[in-house]
Structures are given as structure tokens and as C-alpha cells.
Length: 161
Image (cartoon, rainbow, N blue to C red; front, side):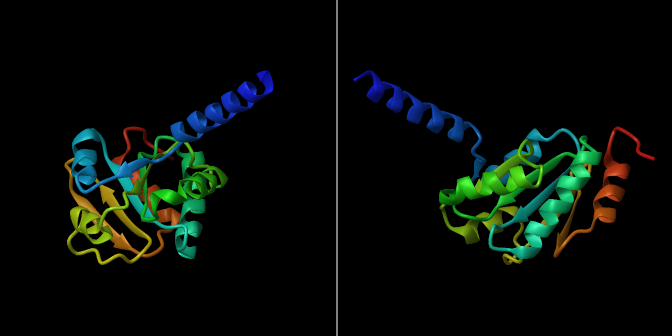
């Protein structure tokens, strides 16, 4: 009986630890709330597990984040919530596991995309550079390190060499 209780306890503990590392659910009002909550410039990157350029971009962002931990980055996976374990594993592998990460709810993907940007039709990767005065610049396609570091230098409170 004690062994059964230990097994049940360990399974419960594993579930709690797994749930605490889960990305937040991204719903139709999440983008507006994100803009309200962020008090400084941020970079929001839309990506998917099924997008090879996205994986390459996440690796690059992991390198930038390692060198510039002041990078205010929000990652939004357009994958299903059911793929949370795969999402967490990839974020860990790219050095981005402690970044603000979200995953699309299982609601209508079109409504979620439209809530972010009516001009976005789902191409990935898709990035939004937000400035201090809530201006944003949307970029479809793979970012390069120079774009991110240049934006960071202009929009960060900490000046880089």
C-alpha cells in the first residue's frame, strides 16, 4: 500500500512540476493585455514546432538572450496546447525556457491571428518589434541577429557596446 501511495504522490508531483512550466494560454484578448502589461519595449515572436525557419530563429534568439539577458522577449507558439511538452523541450534546448512563453488556445486560429494583426495571414516566423511608445513593426520571415541586437540597443535601458 505504501508503494502505491509513493507512486501516486510522484505522479502528482510530476504533473504539478510539468504544469508550472507550461506556457500561458494565448487567447483573443491576450495581445491587448500583453501591450497593457508591458512597461518597456518588447519583441514578440510567433513560431511553430512545424516551421524549420522558426526553429532556426529560436536558436538564434537563444544566443542573443544569452549575451543580452535584458532582451524583453515574448514567444507565442501557434501550435496546439496538446503539444506543450514538445514546446517546453524545444525552448529548453534553445536556452529560452525562462522567457515569457505562450501557446495559442485551441480556439479559432484565425481569430487569434486577427486579434494580433488583421494583416497577418499566418506566415511564420512572424515578429513584432514594440517600442516604448507602443509603436510596432511587423516582420514576416526569419530574423537575423543584427536586426535583434540593433533593435535592442535602441530600445534597451542598458546600452551595449
